[in-house]
Image (cartoon, rainbow, N blue to C red; front, side, top):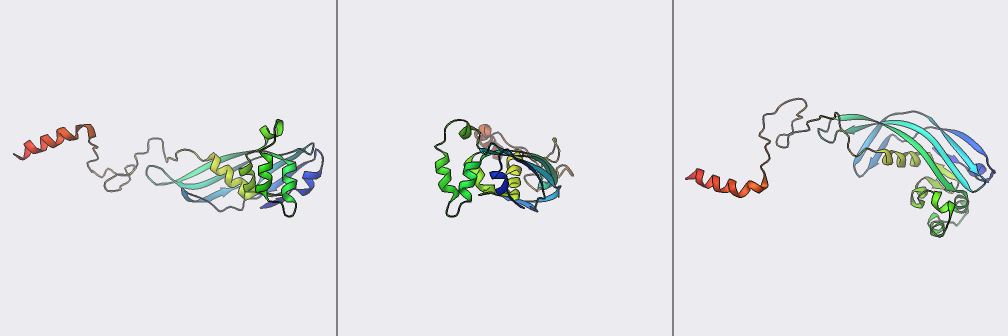
Length: 199
């Protein structure tokens, strides 16, 4: 879903609320493809602050189907997304002009000093979801999902994982495999023991 923010970017201290419907059906990344099971429309709060900054605020919840990092069972991962963006309107308007490339304005932005340079979002990230005055809500949500992704997804805190030998899910069955991992520091002693055992 693409939102046209042209009028808002030119209206001093104007505020708008827009209902956003997430168009994404799945999240694709280097980790894999994860289908979105549940998504609800949410409200974006947009504010023009003295024709200098564009504030984008909102909250959304999405639920994805993700395999457990230990046993690979499907887990319903619910993410609460807190959107809080602070963009320079000058940069947005420059990028909306014909013949202007976001990359060119990015180099200019790096030279800013003072309040705006500190509060503006990372420029490379901004290029992902802003095309001039057009805000791509799906790209914005995609970035927020990646940012909120947990370091590890588990079906349960005490998940036993899968057997390294036969691949059985140890939460469901005890396969009986010998999963003892020998201490590598004792390998030399084990070799000596095996030689004497053969005699």
